[in-house]
Amino acid sequence: MAVQTPKQGPDYRLELSKLVNGYLAVLEWSPARLAKMSGQSKATISRITSYDTERNPYYRPELRTIQAIAQALELTLEQRRELFYTAFPEFYVWDEAAEHGYTVDETNDLLHGRGLPLLTSDK
Image (cartoon, rainbow, N blue to C red; front, side, top):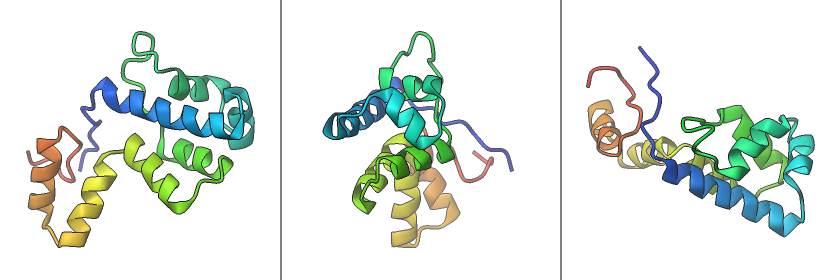
């Protein structure tokens, strides 16, 4: 089964940048401090916080990067969920599908309609 890259527009990256920068502002942290506290490189944090679509039009953070950021920022469960749903919008669809008992095909239909990676490579 092939893993597909999301066909997300730059809007999700802008929202992710705003969200992370908002947490940094509340804590009065710099991106460099977040890099140190999360164990991520300054370049990785910069890609997330600066929203530069010209230099990195297809950048998408890894799951473990977002987890490290969430832990470094000591986010609440709700804040963590918002961060993950912003970085990986397919997670929201997966949770919705699980809550409603959707089949794989029904879930794929939702994902396809939103331009997100499918659970299978059949579509």
